[in-house]
Length: 260
Image (tube, rainbow, N blue to C red; front, side, top):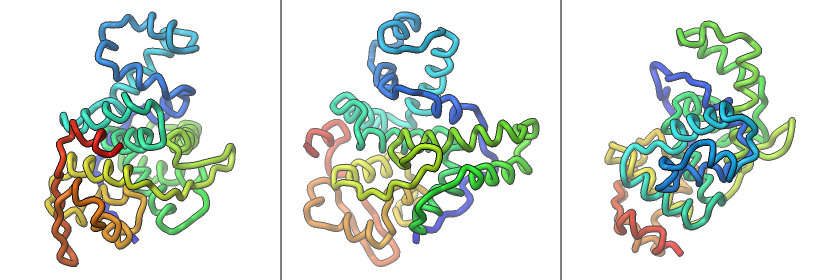
């Protein structure tokens, strides 16, 4: 089982999980990603691409999307996300990439993933309950000053929106009682994950990365898959039992076309 350590001493808390959990149409993300989005009036975007009724609500979505989903730590990640979204729109692979990127940008999302979702996923559990997420948030509240004014209602709403957001990323299924989607990611998604991981990870030994759990595979299975000969054109690696060093073999600009 992939082991994780506490990721954060302090968690940057904001309301983006609640906002994004209520976003009905993820295609709006692609609209904001376009090069000319900044030059388009927010009112025009709302009128042309969405059914959102008020500009105030629209701007809440815009702020959450730009702050948590479409913020990039470096150019390589931005190139990767743009290539996939421009070519596929909202697809299984692009939603995975957006989940990875949002988890980096939104510390509360990353914290809940580490504390609630991934422990359940890697134990082979069927579901995650809202009460589990709420309990995690209540525990976090004890050490986070910015959460001291959170009521039980706020905590329960955030817990519910968190699970809804995971469903929007195709990681859970169902309505009121959501179940975990234990899906096998494709070879293409695996290589996209590796390039994403290498773009954000500073440790040379990939096996020590706190982000390795985001491959949705047990560590042993991940190693077996990534060492297959069919991936030689994409990555250079060396493995010595407890150390795995990986380097990209294709530019980030050319990767997506090579994966077609």
